[in-house]
Length: 254
Ligand SMILES: NC(=O)c1ccc[n+]([C@@H]2O[C@H](COP(=O)([O-])OP(=O)(O)OC[C@H]3O[C@@H](n4cnc5c(N)ncnc54)[C@H](O)[C@@H]3O)[C@@H](O)[C@H]2O)c1
Image 1: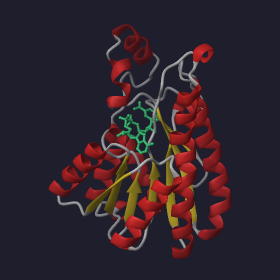
Image 2: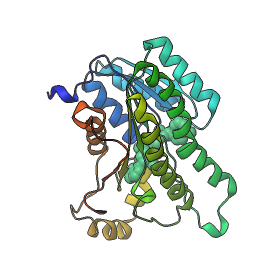
Image 3: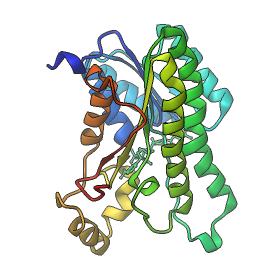
Image 4: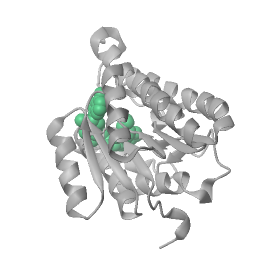
């Protein structure tokens, strides 16, 4: 095991970690000796993830709540304070991706997407940064998307706007919070095999088009996103902040 990617005694909070990328990140940090808090808005997912982690011998806690709701976010961090008294790493992973044309996009879905993907990132960052400032260090990683940086999708305007917002927020947060020893980066996955992409993956024609445009000729796995997060959170990346990293098989090289 590489000592630089060991997180012994460190506390990691991962939002939207009931399944998919978030759960893979939780497992990866747990296997690297961290203590892990999984949040999810769906109680069965949060407690299912908790059971999975505990069965693997990982010290873990679960908290059910909506990252777009300030009271829920305060309660999440208060619960971590009570359980472990610190937070070293925050992964803003919770996200939703409604599919609508701009021409008839329901305002409620637009708002819910911005609340979850962007406001959730802000609210969790605020609570984590207050604690990390007091500790003198911390790492924040925002799971954005190629949709917010370099790759327009289709019929996902709210999603793209929220993810572009996350990338902008990442740079602003990195600039401001560096003074307190807090590093902030974004991770921009391409198409990753998770429940979120099930509909796309079931469309054979669309899948063929996508894969043909990916230099590595395949979709990514949640473990491959987790591996980048592990590196970004580690001391091996101690001089790295304010960057939005692609993990997309080479689809976007800018
Ligand atoms: N899967 C991909 O191809 C892909 C690509 C680029 C970016 N991403 C991003 O990665 C992150 C994880 O994606 P995924 O594929 O694992 O998604 P997913 O839909 O499989 O899982 C997302 C999880 O977030 C939870 N969640 C939703 N709203 C929430 C809220 N308000 N508060 C707390 N939890 C909430 C859901 O219950 C779910 O468990 C998202 O931010 C997504 O936008 C995914």
